[in-house]
Image: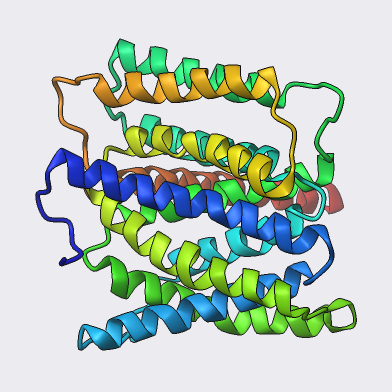
Length: 331
């Protein structure tokens, strides 16, 4: 199968997207499983995950007769992937698999929606209904209760979610998902090695933790992100955001099965709300086509630049006036 943004059947797109979402949920379960018993430190988990993912992607490219080209690296994609990877691992020191995934993809959604609204993408009323329904499901699951999530860890996961939202938006412009994902992973290797060195006294490398980190990096991350990059150009921005709302539910189920987390009525109700909302969003029909990120991003960037230039000019004028008044007072 050739990976690329070519016209595909609905079944193919849904199937590949579902595979990528399962891989995302697996990352949460694998990371929490590795950190729960202290078999590996978060910095070590991040480094092994990134390096194993990079090696896997380079091998896949070699099998296709290609090789990564870092002559024109996408620094924004690499940086967003790095921020996501680091804060994701450290957040799971205290967060459960399901709660962590909810915080993560809740902020992924907010990030992607904010950009979509800024680009004035069409969003029909039924889609809004489904979106609100999904958000209510997420809020219902994480509302204060017997065990509220750790605040600092939640903040770290929120930063990871915003970074992943940016990474997903950048991926909509990808013409070669496997090549771009490999380059992004390779860009992350030096920083994560430095991270391990910085936290070296705290590092542990238990065989079980290493196996979990390699599985997360090679399969759930390397292959999973490549599939997601393939799906993104075929999905609308808001549909991609809504789809990712299913990851917390999948991760919560994985936590119940593999980590002995409790099955609650809260989880069941939130699952119905989230998945039901996603179904409404995906089946809604918009008469207008979605403006592409690649066409509208320069327009949005131009607005930001114009605002910055205007702010700089006004600041310079204010400084000049202040200096003139100071000179007059001295005279």
